[in-house]
Image (cartoon, rainbow, N blue to C red; front, side):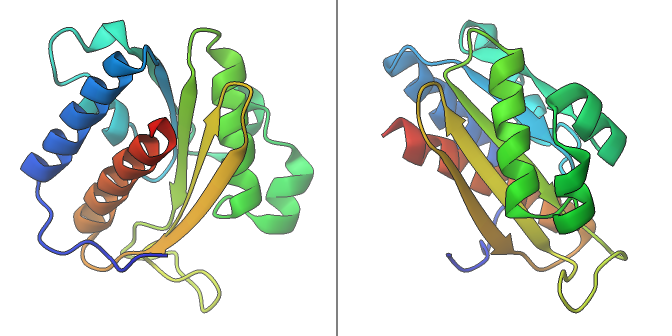
Length: 170
């Protein structure tokens, strides 16, 4: 697990999105997102660029547990046992997004506690879980704890999501 990203900005998030789009085109890939605490920020950064629809399938904003269950197929038992902010939940979110998007080859899922409230000793503000899934491949989860304001946490999470997608695409 890497240290929180220092010195990020909207420009760096957009640059990461653009790098991701370029790499997706190089590998003939298509991405789908499943977002909770980022509220669609990753999908918004991808679709900022004209022509992004050639490799961006879409995104799901599943903020509530009900939406995670109904839209992405996260089992209620996982949410009850592990909570929305957990490896188990984001892994199911990533799998569900891929299932719902037949053309997607990679998905990224994000769920966390952006703050300023809502944290606990076990799950502090800034905790964000990520998962990436590949068609016919493994699901990999990753945990980060970011610092700063709600906006900072969300931007750092989006930036990290792009880094994870790029890692999976090789």
